[in-house]
Image (cartoon, rainbow over all chains, first blue to last red; front, side):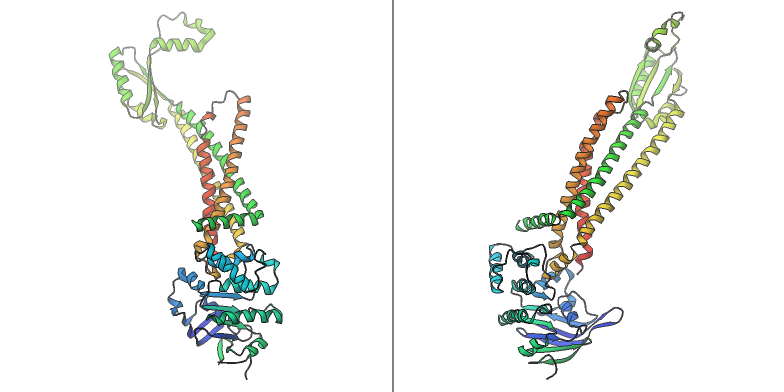
Length: 227
Length: 292
């Protein structure tokens, strides 16, 4: 699903984002990306959705080489990657329903089938009763569930979450993790950057640890720290 | 079709939700277009006055008394055949005297003692382009039946110098003002886009293409530009009519042909400029934020 081959990203003048990272993530995997702030987690994610270009190396997503992907095709790449962020990134002027619908509208689908899909997924994340609300009327956990619904409404093969529980309390976080776990069960590859130690230790999934832009550990069923 | 209605829906929803920005932008367009419109009305009027003055430059060809009727007919045909000539009128000796009498009014008796009519017959030649007066006049110089050619050479040339300066200055003024309008409006639009750059970023992350994001903004800009321009046109038309009425009441002698004011064309120009600046300004203003 995802292949990094000797990928290096340097922010001018000389801050290292990623350095010589090579790794392979299979279809259907659930991967934690752990490490302190500035270790390269966000760089990794921004490279994946081609928000950034690597200075060296090759990134392949779903069999497509991102370096040869033309700029105008980037939106089509992103439609196949659901994104969940720490700050939710919801459109403030749209209702919960319309926020999720937007992800379908950009693909040219806005008909009845799309609306049913939105209703269905919002029910799935437990927000069936708040579809008409606006983001600022929701709690953090609810907003994050909207953003997960939006990321998953297209049923993308890959879902990326950048610290999705970073702003949430432990109970709410657990709910969000449950949701991501269920999404993974449907076959969607999930890559989640986090520094929620407890969560990672409990889930026992593949853990890729980054430090100063380098992969220092890649463990099949790891914990947050060294075992 | 569904997409188009989606784009319009997005545009109008956002105009409504950001109503403060919408009003600010419409007022900006309104004011700049209004000033531009008023200046254009002024310039048009000045131009009409200038044209009026220029048209008064006529060539008068005075004939010798020896000219026969057939001479006159030949030269008449020749004059009317010249491509520069708009019209030509023959004034006989008798007609010239009648005119003089009419001009003198109550002092006519000074003409009573004249032994014969001393006034020459003449052709009054008006030109399509008065600037060519000296060229045309030169053709009559030195003919056997022509006594003198007059077209007020120096006055004509001075008039043309002054009018061309006035025309150029007003053209530069309109261009400058147009530039200011473009800058002001596009700046307002850029501000309103800047306030929403986060939205644009989110749209891009969800996988919207640039045009998918751009269309609603372009429609918004078009709407703002058009409504500002419509208000400006209404104000210019009402204002102009008001001022013209006042002028008519107080300055009856003014010869400016107000009725011919091309308010229609003027309105269309303002509408077009307003709409274009709005739409293009939005489309271009967005460019910076689309490179995510």
